[in-house]
Amino acid sequence: MKKLFLAAIAIIGFTTVNAQDISDNAIGLRLGDSDGFGAQISYQRALGENNRLELDLGITSGNNYDGFKLAGVYQWVWALDGDFNWYAGVGGGIGSINLDNTPQGVDDSETFIFAAGNIGIEYNFDIPLQLSLDARPELGFGDYRDDLDFDIALGIRYRF
Image (cartoon, rainbow, N blue to C red; front, side):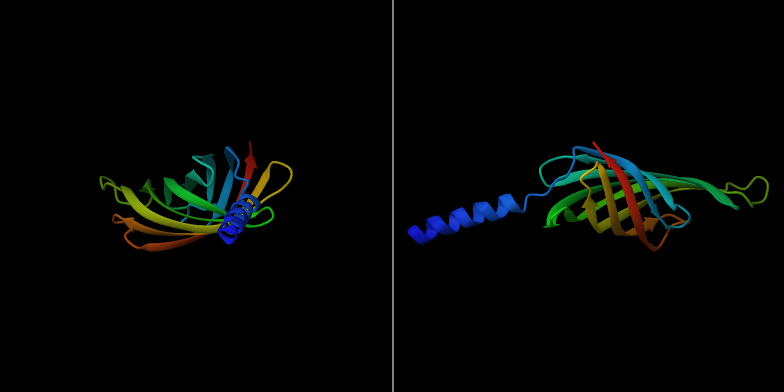
């Protein structure tokens, strides 16, 4: 009985020591490369003690196209070491692309949807700054994005 009591105390102490510090809100930029959607405005909202929702909006204008992409990812966050956390999540999104070099009268726009996974690592500074590096594979459904795209991005966010 005494061993069971000591084991319970050790488990409670271990989970308390490893509690992560995720902020209620964080906003900033997610800089990566995914079919021309390199820079995204990124917002994170805590939904619980160890999970959150991340919304990313990318707007792009290239030589031959204009477009936007909105992604939403539900993430689980775990403490790694000190101020380092790692996270994984699933989600999806919607986007639209408008091609510029098409013949007159041809519909040159397309809306697409995609499913996404997410895995990454983040560091929370003592000041309200968060840096993250993540990978997000996206499976697109549509003529323009009917493939698997692998996005790697650096996130810079203000935590509040």
